[in-house]
Length: 290
Image 1 (cartoon, helix red, strand yellow):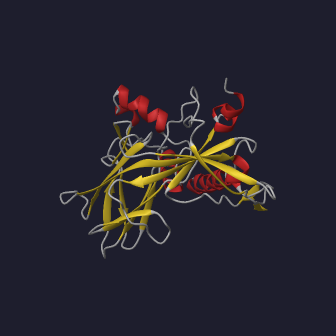
Image 2 (tube, rainbow, N blue to C red):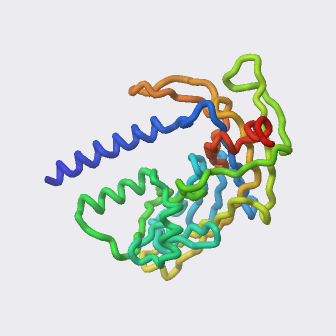
Image 3 (cartoon, rainbow, N blue to C red):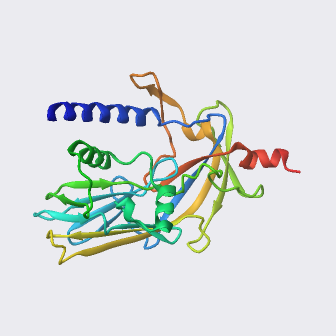
């Protein structure tokens, strides 16, 4: 029976990975996309992968956000010669002023927190999180205690349970830029002999439309008597709007299922993107605004 469960888990993981691979495209190639550039409040340096990172006494923490709607994804690398531990139930993600456990016990969240959790919970958690969820189902147990991960020397653990922008189907995603927003032109990534117009609006930490904080509780012993807090805040410093084909870039191949693979020249760990309602685009409003 255990072998069957393990086999089904592997099959399920493969299917989900394939689904995510297929999803690396825009839903409306004739629409518009906004790219959100994220700034670190403390001006964190970038690592070799061009991700914000913070190196402490026992861990090097990397933050990466690239995803549709953004993802609060954090990778912890153990830089010591002994195991370290992360308490994900005490570690938190704060957005819109409400603090959420990185791994909550859902039925113990107060109403306000739970409603916020539902709005921001990612529908596509990281592979690490999926392994954990399937393990709970396969073993037939319900976790009521804190989720604590052990990270072996030089090992890593990645967590990504939340979006940076609420996944609220009742409202349009993104922000409506003013038709007088600053703009510039560059060679179109797909259309030959054409220029793409990029509309741009910059923000300060004070007026940014998206602000968030990640707090991690890390220790070198399971009792967490020596727990260290690794905390960092971020904000969106710039929004750039462009047509979806320019954002997607050239097709560079296709996967075994025949889905296209695109270059995505805007892709980087310090940014994320949102497909917007075309009627909220600058181009639409310049053309049809009364």
